[in-house]
Image (cartoon, rainbow, N blue to C red):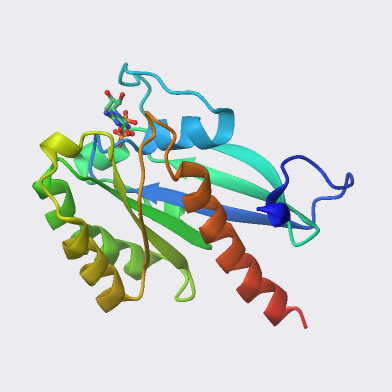
Length: 186
Ligand code: GDP
């Protein structure tokens, strides 16, 4: 992962990429963000409601990329994610819980909402979280892989708890975005 050293290469930020987290309540969106941005995990559910974001700066292909990652922080419970949430997003992590079939069945609806609001070139990663709970698995990896291929999404299974694939999932999306944005700038 030599292209992905953390921290600033120099002081200048070359790109700011907005990434939104979406998916059903309790699939682990906040914990994925906490793990990626601060390398933390908490078993308690958060109490706050309202939109918030966190940032992390990474070096991708010698450029300083600031990832600005937005968490719905509870809005999705009421299916009331505002259009402002999606505005300007160049990437999305569409998260389901591998132990909750319903959260996977709802992915198509989230995708429709995302595509209705976001830029048509947005990079979307389908994320099957809680891969540490293999004994409780309700969504076969193959089902998700097939869906992702059909819809042109990236796909990865993660565990925010065990820190499996979390960084890789975000870095894959950021690198894809960088590839597109840097091509446009040529
Ligand atoms: P959100 O509503 O989608 O933001 O979900 P949260 O991040 O609040 O997580 C919901 C619950 O799932 C919390 O109790 C978390 O501790 C738990 N959780 C989140 N990620 C994982 C994971 O990777 N593995 C396990 N076992 N639990 C997780």
